[in-house]
Image (cartoon, rainbow, N blue to C red; front, side, top):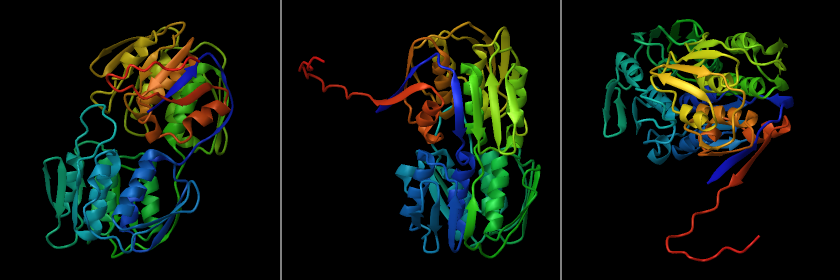
Amino acid sequence: MEKYIIKGGHKLQGEIEISGAKNAAVAIIPAALMVDGICRIENVPSISDTQMLLSILTHMGAKVRPLSRTTVEIDCRNVHPADAPFDLTRKIRASYYLIGAMLGRFGQAKTTMPGGCNFGVRPIDQHIKGMCAMGAQMEVSGGFVYGTTPSGRLRGAYIYLDKVSVGATMNIMIAASLAAGRTVIENAAREPHIVDLANFLNSMGADVRGAGTDTIKVNGVSRLHGGSYSIIPDQIEAGTYMAAVSAAGGELTIKNVIPKHLECISAKLREMGVEIEDGEDFLVVRRENPLLRTNVKTLPYPGFPTDMQPQITATLCLAEGTSVVTEGVWDDRYKFVNELRKMGAQIQVDGKVAVVEGVKNLTGAVVAACDLRAGAAVVIAGLCAQGTTEIEDIHYIERGYEDFVQKLRSAGADIVCVAEPDEPAQGDDSIPAAG
């Protein structure tokens, strides 16, 4: 087991380069299962989620060849429609994209219910609704998801999503790429990574139109061929570093970004008194004056992203006055608040609303990462807290942030990752050596 140790109070200065988008990569890698050829994917973030998905494809018979730390070649021509390895799929939320990929290519699928971060109920009913509309027979039983297509191939359908769902939108797009006929997805999500998935599929021969709007049309094709594709920069990773320098103070140049994808985050930070300069593919984020209070409500894109809610909440702990944060996407995404309270934060939660009373200082404490973005939030709090903060359960953080410690250290943060000593076996009364 490892943990982070942060000595707070250091302003951030320098440059940080953003990696490929996690939320795009975890859909694009399973979508490679649909490709009858070799696909080369560049700008893949080196994080535990992508490594796990590549392992899953390998177990299913794919040839996966890393060409560099961020480029991989995937050959799924000889993949067999076998069960995905359950010990891996149950650990990762994005394993549900295997449902659409396997049904689309093989007409059958079996996998576990997805795992990943636990911050409230995240059902897959809209995914299943979409597959059923395209002619699949679906069953969820005993923690597994089963799907079969009696005709051997999905067929195009009109699908109206009852709620805007990023995962369902992407899963249906994947499955529909090889379906017979046209699929229309209404009330589709519009996030940048949905557009990225559509661009990947199209580069492999699919016909996906309208991604980035609330109506997506997919004209099914008979096969997808190989090709090359580069994943977009990670909007949420960039937003996390924007929040970090806003909380800790200083000036960061954040490179390899698409500034338009960050407008919803930039606008809110500017309200808080943070200076942001937009470049062609970079941002300069500067905070010298005290932070100002503001209100935040998370919404589907282009609204403020739910994946940035914990980070902005941590930043608002140091703003002057009272801020109100409303979680408009998930039912229960405030578990991290108890960790921030250990550090002196004044936050009251009522349902989906958190009232944040700004304090002069936070104080270092022993805290835990409750999930991926909650972990980023306590890191941000630790960067500006007085004293030392120890963060446990960092495996959640490393699901989605590449080289998190190294990037922060390069910008002047005093943060290290250390191994926690194993607990002595019960009854072990040996005395450790002095030193």
